[in-house]
Image 1 (cartoon, helix red, strand yellow):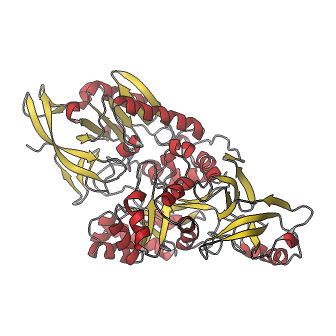
Image 2 (tube, helix red, strand yellow):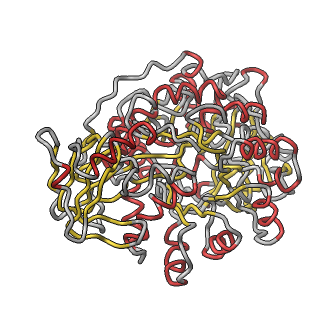
Image 3 (cartoon, one colour):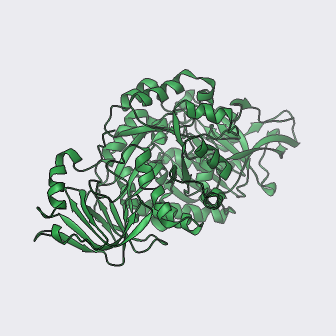
Length: 603
């Protein structure tokens, strides 16, 4: 696959690299006396030199060999004594929209942490505004040095027939995107039921990607790791980030899949399987690292792929092996290993100088030979992006929300009623289908905050008066008040949750008026608000500002009684109709094993 993400193609500069390597022409930059992390041999080469020309590595010197012969009067020399030179970090599966900022601000946030490339699946924006919204995102992305590579959204909507989205993508559109230079593969094929049942469009999307000789990334969460997993992989899906146990990871590895080991803001999967993976001694060349979803507060306060590396090493993974998982393994999987993934002659000079291999604090970050970040600060600036109008006017609920909107009538005036509820757990995308007993007051179902049973509602925000909304209940958040957000995977409809109708109405009204976002309300007062006017998913403010706003929302959650990590992210997947076991969409409850609708009332 031709890599369009390097400053200069190798065929245009190989003659110069030959001369620089032999000392016949000076290098642009020489890094001296580094501890070179060799991901090709899983070792550290002490006192190594690296010569860079035309944005690529021309020479590496070790075992007593130096790059002194590559230094000319105008060569920039970087003293890396005591520092570790590692390949630039790659996130193999990320949704930029979860950072609540656009691609350029996202780049400014993550590059100082050593991230030099990402494989982004923009299915959040695609579910709201389709491929036109994706094109706008990549126009913004092109303004930064970060290599932002597109994996075309495969599931817009995630599952057919259970929710209403703002747009859809079919196999013909996928085929079109495979001709775009920024496209490097197919985004997570969440519709594994469609693959297993032979659904025509799902298989056609995979086939169009295979015709383009690009990888298909996966999303397999079914309990069947025998026939179902075999069939899914046989269709052409070659990687998966949805594993919750070591047994999941091992089954996929044994069948030839690349497994993306995930540690995001809310989906904290590494502790669940990495220690067993390390102990097993299984070969990890088919293992990669990813974040999937990272909140702005996580990026600004804790980091990005450097944060994932810290966690992996703390769980017992060898640091160089961990680095392989987000460098050479990633480049090999995505077919760009000839250009990226290692610090070796001919490769793009995407290099991070770390202070150590425990905290992974980046002193210098280099992309295509250019110093782009230093000491935690980006050396590039981005002006605010001018988003098109169709992406900034996406709130179309079609009704005036009042407390009475949240009334759920039943055929009894008072007493109690058994209902189906979504049970959530901290740090996991999986939910449970549980039975709850809730009060009946004046012929309507009510929340039961004393037993942590909250009322929930999902409004179609894309189709105005023609849209629908549906009710459910949820347990596990433990809050008093109400919360609402338009970040509700994957249709990104308006999701409202709370223990009283008045606060729920105020939360919904607040987001309807500001164009979308996240809001926390308690006792008739807005405690915190993050306005996300771009598709109801992203802010037009700097990432640091959005991080501070999210911090206030998270503090509000705690004030309201919730102690979950990144609770808005956990709330946001209550509508994710492709992950077991029970979800709520604007059409009602979805059984995400049978993919049939389920009733709310159980008696």
